[in-house]
Image: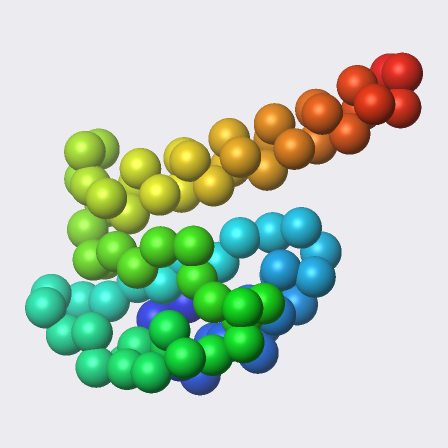
Length: 83
């Protein structure tokens, strides 16, 4: 997770290693993400969510979906390798 466009170089590294990046912002202030959609696909975020940590928040749902997605991708790789 990152809180602004300055984190985009790390997102490229995450993407290269099979991870997912999630952008967060406080309140209604998304100014730190201005122009992110124009960046290289490998540096883009999977979702941009408010920094709310409640059980039903979009951020928590985003984290859960990202972990599930990566887990299923790894399970599929193991299946294809006969494990």
